[in-house]
Length: 417
Image (cartoon, rainbow, N blue to C red; front, side, top):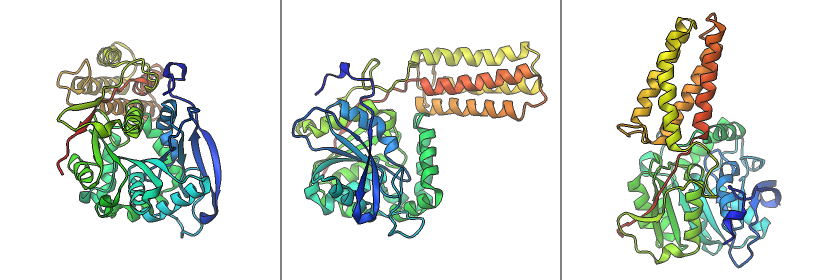
């Protein structure tokens, strides 16, 4: 393992590579990381989910490279920077079998005969398909946020669960996902969802010979605990780990914990552990960890700022000549913020029923509302008040974006066979 203290906090940046894949008639784009560690390790291939690309896998790729792995993350045809497969009729939203074929063709074009794979969401479905049909290509497999749960095998049932996940993700993921979805296009996303939702993955899981790690974020609404345990039971050589404080995209909200977890699994260390109740595989995110996300605002400071800013919003506007709508808006924002703060699971919380990521998303939403109101609803009010509302909105957004949301620990869950 390389000396982490000599690396940048997030690991090396990716290289952008385009590979001609004759089987799909396109040059497939991928992000790659070379660790420079040498040795006999097979590469790690990261597989993206619905309507997404390798862009949202960058935090994980950088950290795995910092831990000594060579990593490749392709934009499968039709997503990210890769053109769609011309053999697919417009809009070209593929099913799982088609994406697996695309992946195989890309692996062959890259000369990769065998690798370990990390798949998120639909990427996990692709990983299972590949491992079941071509076991010689898969060294080890990680299924993160594996879909589809039998309860949600209709698009109109599954997509609401995808939306519910968003409030449990850290706010910095939202703009990335919106850029990805705009790049993919609504039509292709809908077609992919329709073709991938009704996928009887349980029929192929018993055929996965490779050691497999199932990863679930505790707040994942797409992968429930019951289904995660069933997926693990059906695997001949499966382990289940739950990451506290994370949701469907644990590789983004908790990239340090996820990268270390994947590294431990790929090394074979988890194979030697017998799952017991409350078995902590990895501890919670630690301040100062070189693999931790660069978010400078610790929970304690964030909690103090929450209390100070909400109390100021409840009092200061009534002392200023800012206009009735401005005073009402800022006071209402302060009242909502105070209630939110008291409910949040952080040092200023009393009831602590809201996970910190939910609080951060509410904070970001409040920031956007204040900015929009300053530009629209507050027209005609004194300019100083409108600027105060805009400044408060910007402050809310910055506070949400820079706040630490420590995740973990990661627990190995015993699953009866």
